Amino acid sequence: MFMSVVTHAPSVPVYAELAGARVLLTGLSPTAGVDLARGFADHKCRLVLQTRHDGPETDALMTLLAEAAAETQHFSTDLDDGDAAVRFAQGPAQSLGGLDIAINLIEVSPSDIAGRSSLDEIETLVSQKLSAATLMTRVIANRMRLTLTEGLVLNVVLMAPATNDAEQAFTGILRAALATVTRREAQTWADKAIRINAIGPRGAIDEAQGGACLTSGTDIAALALYLASRKGRQLTGHIFDAEGVAAAGC
Image 1 (cartoon, rainbow, N blue to C red):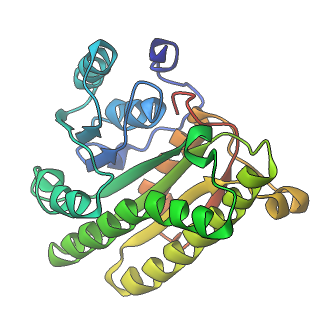
Image 2 (cartoon, rainbow, N blue to C red):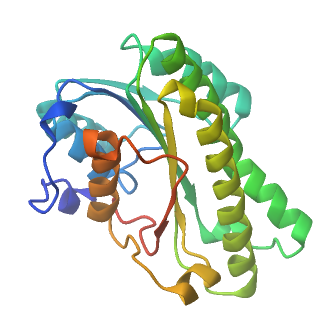
């Protein structure tokens, strides 16, 4: 249940400059993005929230966020289709007159990967999972450019650690594709002071090399807030490791 993770984490720093920031969070659900949403709500940001489904838990989550945030707007729509994602990014996502921060959550479940054993099938799934967020990144970054906004776009892939060869192969290809897209978009928008970063699943090579890894929803929320703050304004084109945060209320 998401109720266990919506309280403010005292370990998450507070960035006063984020008060009033216009924040888009797509892919939010009672089991994905709760810590992220609560972190920005606690900073008194103005939130545009997109969920795929309505229901009692989603309604309760929206109520809790509205109590903390400076403003909330909620849209329930499916963004799996690229055209739908572009329409949302051009319209409802801009309902606050523009955006300072956009975070796209991309969930991958074991059932998504099940039965896909060939390289072509895996690459097709990777493309399907990343296409909507990639298109929204471009539309939102262009709007930030037009409004002279020094903004941040953060794409976050949430999935459980791989448990078999197919999932491991998918993880490696997905991370490589996410890194390529992130770096390309970061280079495209760098001279406009628009930062593009990503959080992705840790691959086998990354695990062997060691290094820090995000392991909880609180970790992801803290990183997102840092990247959105003045302290994170020099960081773009980076992909950060996450592991074990799928369906954990992150």
